[in-house]
Image (cartoon, rainbow, N blue to C red; front, side, top):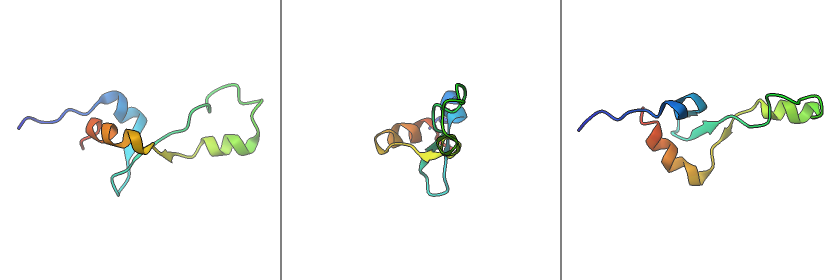
Length: 64
């Protein structure tokens, strides 16, 4: 069986947790931050588990 290739775009955006779930970063935290409250900006720094519907595809993209 050949080696599985990692999807490079996905590897830069997602990472696997110890339990095998895929984690992503939140959107809307790069620019136009002056109009957003401090609380919201703090929340945007936290990573979050990717949606359950996307887990299967993301795990296939990140085999290792």
